[in-house]
Length: 86
Image (tube, rainbow, N blue to C red; front, side, top):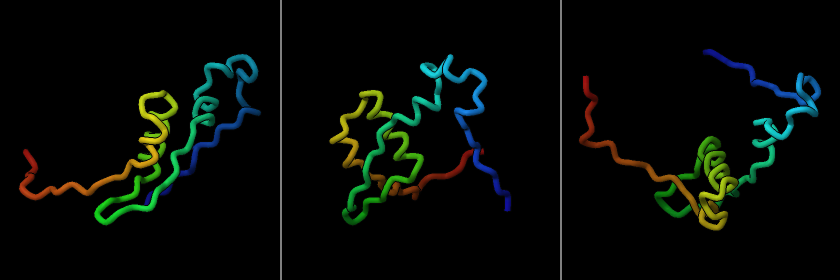
């Protein structure tokens, strides 16, 4: 089993600290809102962490209203009749 270590980004060791903070991706990511989870109806699936982050980024960019994003769920797709090509 392959394990990976998490990447740690610390402002204390940044070579352009206090110079380029306005353009910093880490600063932008830290300011994103988190979309809360809802109780789900039958057949609905909760979003995984990556999906929740994506929805939160859409909200932060103004592409999706927070009220609409709060109700987003995943649905299992039927893959019957689908075959691999090649």
